[in-house]
Image (cartoon, rainbow, N blue to C red; front, side):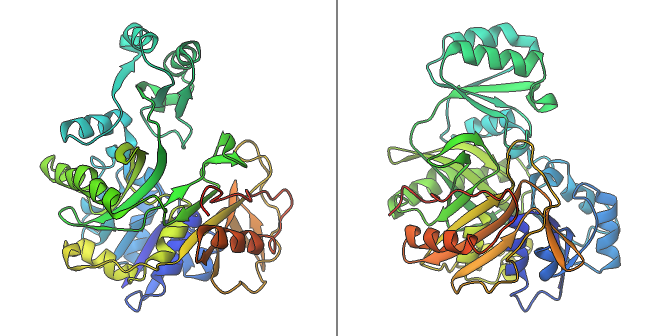
Length: 426
């Protein structure tokens, strides 16, 4: 079949790499893609939210299946657009409907969904400018630290952990009265701070059934030892030593199964990936957030560990036959290290030439491109997160060590990466 992959990051390069390994993949198109995805298929110069042009590209290239990488097109309703368009309604779109995408698009929607379906999460309140005074009183009486979340999409920057009431009240005022996060912060969710170890669990669901994919942990802080500003992700590891069969059973029974059943009960059309951001609170899983797609850079460790044919998995999702699939997983550990532009996540330069991509890649390592673009024979930086190296090893530390070594063979001016990804795991 002919496939269109939407997106342009490291996640999409990992997807493209995996999709092209399938004998079921005839032609792969990526919109808009990057220099790395261009090695796997044909990049199309179409923006991720230009539904009309994306639909037109699907028709002209006889596309059978669309895989949506990032959240924004899903939250804006790409699934519904294709389904309601006579020319594209026959095309399978892997990703939830606009209504179901509110699990990620609205923190308040997600919290209400969890409450309705008895899914364990932090206690919360939600506030707008209309009940601002009630929010102030709620924060004043709240235990510390307290978490403030912009309701909508805020490019991963809309979550604040406040250590004292003064800071919380100040941020609350900035969000609701001074539009700190624009429209995303017109509603604010105030919730209890969950203690424990964070992890990410992923499933692929056909709306009735699901398959559990390898779990992962990502590293959001820019600095070594998890210090500094939050980023889109500086690295990831999989599997996690503390995720036992007993813990996973709790995740399935208390979180995944009620979520999939809740989607059916609420008549939310959902065929695609669900990302569960979880907290392991002394052996008990609680949901921090939902994402309606795969994470980045978690995809770069999860997808390489899956032995199954990805196109077969997506076709089974479309047919609602995932109950017939068994996920086969590489038992080795995987560690991904991200190279970013100097200054990221703040202001950073683009258009810097990248050296070393032509070098031979070590066995058990993969180089995925994220913020890159091809000009002639050269590859240049084109974003904050630029390259991702994923390596396999018998332990997380061994995999991370090889990724760090491989990263040393690559270079661009101002390049920075954390050398301590997976530091807490031997």
